Length: 240
Image 1 (tube, rainbow, N blue to C red):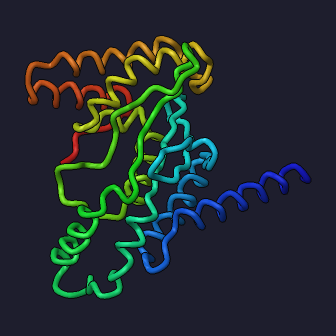
Image 2: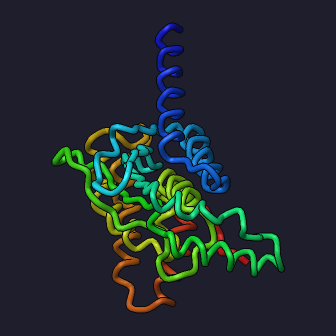
């Protein structure tokens, strides 16, 4: 009980430290997003580590570590640039996000966030037991579309995507995650990191579908393979 209390106190201390460094007076939506990150990471039994974020010359950083349904250990490194946040906050109170309809509200948010998109960004890695190194995965928020939410919300979405990696990989845009799983899933099985009931036959079956999808010649064929995989692996039927 004493150790549990000590661990909880340390978590609370670290949370307060990170929120103090990564929040900004006058940017309440951003600050709520930061709180949301902690809530979600706690719900999925992940870890937030201020020291593990490393050092970047123009940003303060912290790291989030979560384990996927595959057993892969992921690290999300979040980088925050306080100077940009403070500038955004200068006239933030003058913006009327409630003016007009929902489309206009989204446009206002998108216009602001696009200009300050480097205020907070992140990078994703998976832990490779073969080398003991963190390997990069090119997963990030869309850089073509107009932003629709605060950067912290993108971090939360990425946490949920990685925690459910075996299923998330079958979403159409997840080419990079599928490619990494083809290599990482057998590795974490060898390292005894997969759930105890997962056999190598299960791994081969899953990776086989990924390879089959990667070798498709067109979108129609790929959608057919995806549907077959969802039925076989997750007992999902085609959506109406």
